[in-house]
Amino acid sequence: MEMTSEERADAPRALEELVWEFGGPHQVARLAEVEKINFWRVRKGKTVPQRAKATRIAAVFGLRPEEVVWPRGFTEDPPRVPPRRESPKVDLHGLYEDSELRDEIEALIDRQQQLAREQCEIAEKLALFGERIVAQEKTQIEAK
Image (cartoon, helix red, strand yellow):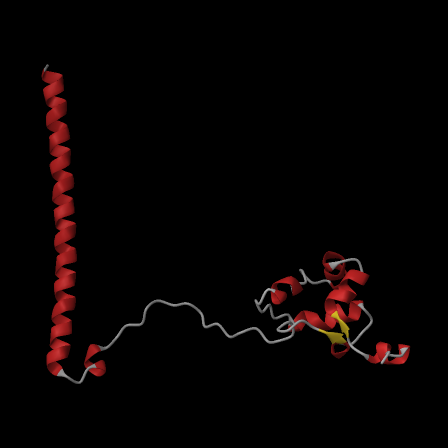
């Protein structure tokens, strides 16, 4: 069955087809006053939500957004991504009811902090020792 010209006019048209008719993605993005049109990345399986751009892009073609066949994911809302933050502080007393386990964990944390302090002290002593050796070598060179 062939579609009549009336049916074709009523049928939504693909975004990619419309974009190339109007001079390519850069031209359409400029006319719609949007940064760019990312329908390529949608086709590769990556969703690039652009609901806010859809109305402006459709207006460039003289159409309403529902008269354009948008690529899958193009007009979806962007996913909600929570802001990044520091690691949460864990209250071990509230987390573990087993007092033996809680005490063991606290002891391990204390031991780790003590080892970190000792490591810093050793690094300071090594730096001081290195400075003394360099000073001795300088005095020996000057004595010769």
